[in-house]
Amino acid sequence: MTRTVFVTGGAGYVGSHCCKAFAEAGWNVVVFDNLSRGWADFVQWGPLVRGDILDLPLLTQAMQACKPDAVAHFAARAYVGESVSHPADYYRINTTGSLNVLTAMREAGVRSIVFSSTCATYGVPVHTPIDETHPQQPINPYGWSKLFVEQMLADHDKAYGIKHVALRYFNAAGADPGGCIGERHEPETHAIPLAIEAALGLRPHFTVHGSDFDTPDGTAVRDYIHVQDLASAHLRALACLRETPRSAVFNLGTGRGTSVKALLDTVEAVTGRRINRLQGPRREGDPALLVASAAKARQELNWQAPLSRIDTIVRDAVAWHRAQSDTPTLAGAGGQPMTLRTP
View 1 (cartoon, one colour):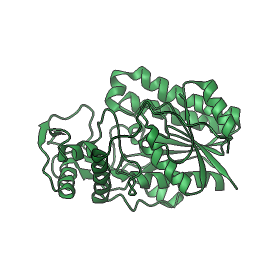
View 2 (cartoon, rainbow, N blue to C red):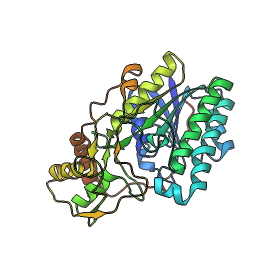
View 3 (cartoon, rainbow, N blue to C red):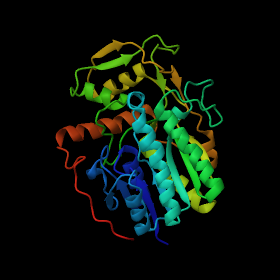
């Protein structure tokens, strides 16, 4: 039986890797993306409908045209600092835009959604590792904008029978091992690509924010998860919604933390190059330790994260960045959309 998944934000980093996993598992993939922060050349596994989730009529029309079995919702703004300086954008795009997605689903008769959530809904950890029962007290508008969506999902389940799986990511990282796609942001704020670019001479230095945390080496510790392992979790979530439709929330992490210093050491070892390290102050609200408990996902989704060793993550990311530095980008945010084809 043909299955179709409608992927908002499918031209972005995590969304595009999930599209690849969906297509390889036999799903028809339709991407809906305005390309404001996505990339046309990342849309390789199905048609692109160029549109904005704030445009409810177009969103509804696109969803009704392809008649999807499920929605995978990635479209969002995702910079913590930007959310503090421009909170209105985050509540409009992340929260109101997600309400539009749910409204379009109701109009199109779609009853399953996988939602890209975040560990930022937890705020400052009160215990580690963080499991799904941890209190949710966000400390920035980005986290709040995603938590509001989780509440909307719960309410839409009760009122309209729309089932959801919300996946709370920790630190997505790495690149497609086959080299098709990887991590590309403008501006770049993520630690691993910043470290790789510093090692490859694409930026002058890497700034370590804080050296006096209560951690073994004084630098902040984060739980990095390979983007392909994230994609496999989304695929398992789609399968579970089809097999036994019920709503659920899962953390996606490894339970292992990597300090900033250890990350930089790994990048240097993989690239064979030294990184010019500058010492900077702590960033406001930056926890010392963010590590997930992913036991629930392992047990209920039958999910594993075999690629999420930090050396594997860095190796795949370095291969992607080296290939990109040798090959000009074929199509960026101004790329032309493909024509929607009804499956």
